[in-house]
Image (tube, rainbow, N blue to C red; front, side):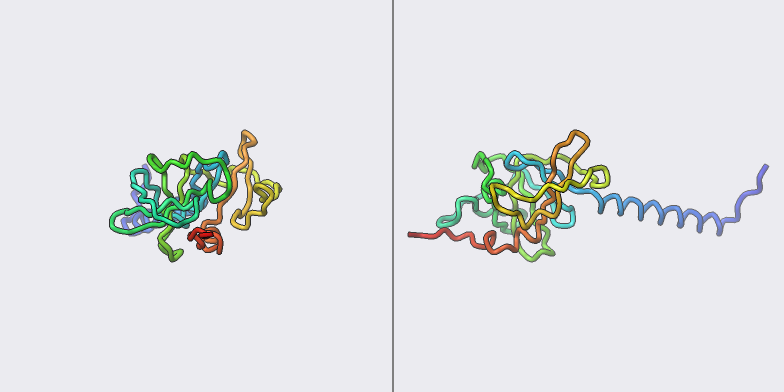
Length: 180
C-alpha cells in the first residue's frame, strides 16, 4: 500500500492541475468563433468582438437613413444602432425586424452597434476547419472586413467577419440617406 502524499504537495498538484485546466479551457474558448447565417452565407464571428446575441429586442425605425439601417434597439437601457448585415452587404434579406437575432458589438470597440443576422449556428473551432484560398469578393467587390475564409468537413465555405473593421468603415458609419 502506497503512503499518502503529504498535504502540502497534494495542494500544489491540485493547483497546478486546476491552472492547466483553466488555461486549456480559456484557449479553447478563444479559438471558438460564433457561427451565423446571413444573406445565404455562413459567417464566423470572433467572440471577443461581440458581447452577446439578443433575440427579443424591438427595433424602432428612424427616418432618413440608409435602407440597410433598421433603426435603434433599447437593450437593458442602452441604445444600439441596428444594421441588417445582409442588406449592408447587398445580399438577399427578408427585411423583417420582428424575430431577429442581433449581435451586439463589444463595447471595447467604442460604439453601440448591433448586426442583424438570420440564425446563429453555434460555436466553431477554426482548428477543425481548413483555410481556403478563395478570394474575399462579394458581388464583384472586395470585402475588406473578411479576415479569411474556411472550408468545413462538408466543403461549406465560412467567411470570418472582422467586426472591428466592418463597424469602423466609412460606409458603415454613413447611415444617413442621401436626400435628392
